[in-house]
Length: 246
Image (tube, rainbow, N blue to C red; front, top):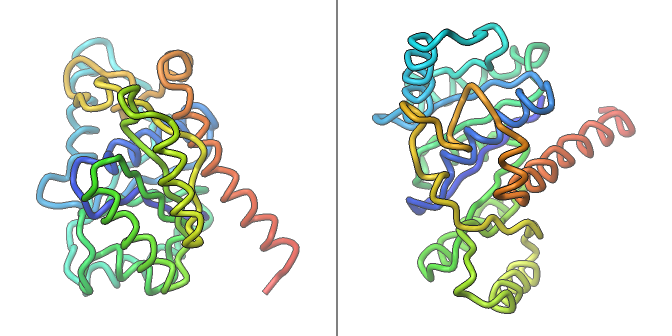
């Protein structure tokens, strides 16, 4: 079982959207067994999005609910509750291939993602970043803090648009790599549809019950390329475990 999270300590970088979209791609395009944990109170955006989508679809002819991946709301997000949740994840090993966790966007000593990282529960943290100076500084600091715990991280650029020359992205990515931080070559271009909620008219990405792969590939092909890159992390880990037992 591979546990991952798209995470950023700075708001607006897209962590929740990517957690949702990655889970949907894994389940509906690749047929993998997926669990999505919403540990981001009080909004619980992912859990509430699933509830709204179901209401919307049921009113318009229904949906095959048996094919949907579960979205669980983490009720107890105190340090003790998160520790208890972390201890229970191993019991899910036989039921799921991937567990994605949407954490609150902060990184204090008692925050959920930090407790997960220290317990070596997360296999991968994927950090979205854009060219905003504060976002860059936050992502750099975040990646380096995680690396100090031995946590595997991957950084990628989100909200890429033509007003910024590719050479500037190249330069920033080079700085990340010089610091020993893995950077994805897949840059996700600015897409307004990604910011819309799915509780009415479904946008092409923000959905827990569908992943329109053909449309995504036409409008933002780097999205599925990024997701496939994350899947390769899981494949390499499984291969390593088989090659080097214990």
